[in-house]
Amino acid sequence: MTQHRANVAGGVEISGARALVTGANRGLGRAFVEELLKRDVAVVYAAARNPETIDVSDDRVIPVRLDITNPDDVRAAASRCADVTVLINNAGAMLRAPLLAAPDLSAARTEMETNYFGTLAMCRAFAPVLTHNGGGAMVNVLSVASWLASPFNGSYGASKSAQWALTNAIRTELRARGTLVVAVHAGWIDTDMAATVDETKISPSDVAAQTVDAVRRGDEEVIHRRRDATGQGIATHRPVVALPRHPATVGRERLAVAELTARRASPGPVISVLSRPRGRYG
Image 1 (spheres, rainbow, N blue to C red):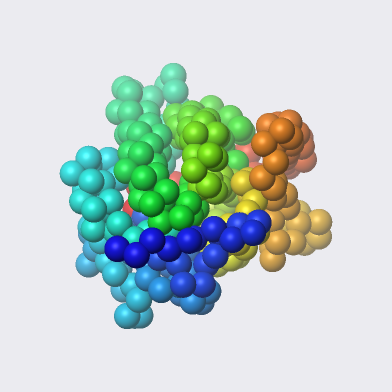
Image 2: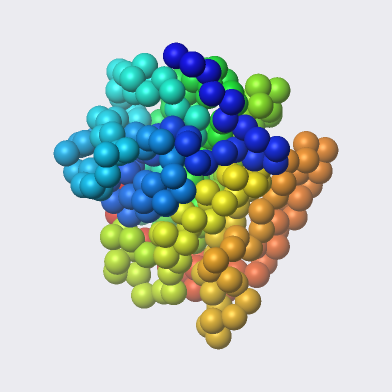
């Protein structure tokens, strides 16, 4: 296989890239697939537990069977998709369970197994692939629940906090290899998962577009938030904050952004997390 230099000055080239999106059959995952196609990628490996649910009509889309909690599936995907230059870890699970009042640990284990260990398995399997193909980009879809705690959705928030810590650590490990690692934090996204939530939501296409823009620029953290009650203050066409790749300052900036976001958050987003529907996506 011919090695392709994926990274360009300031970020990662999207046009001509070969991308893999997990949880690509619906919601935000499908939006990522469609956005990548708009940006003239060469191939999108659209991964889902049931590849027959991938219904995007484009010859560049290749459905892939992938359950990120299944080691055999992960190994097979890394072998089959060995030309990937952009990996988007979107698949996850959210079961709306408290930490103490849940009847058992099953929800917490499922969320941690999927959101943390499943993402880690994908990162471990594809890090060598990205390195071989010129560095590329690894995008982990997180949540504002990474730092906003909810008593009714505690295990999900814990798994997302762990996934955020994982992302930060992997970024430091892969920096020397030239791989861009992007953390995406979003509030409510207008997908099936949030259909019953009566809150202002972010369009999945907006989140996908902003994230792809961040990859192209080389931003390491992207925070998407809904507009306020007046419709002002938070533009949907750009991320509120995108942190550039500055190793000496990114830690302090990230902490400041997290603190600012939590402080600015109205009761709406916090309460809405409590009523988040159950389910597994991807």
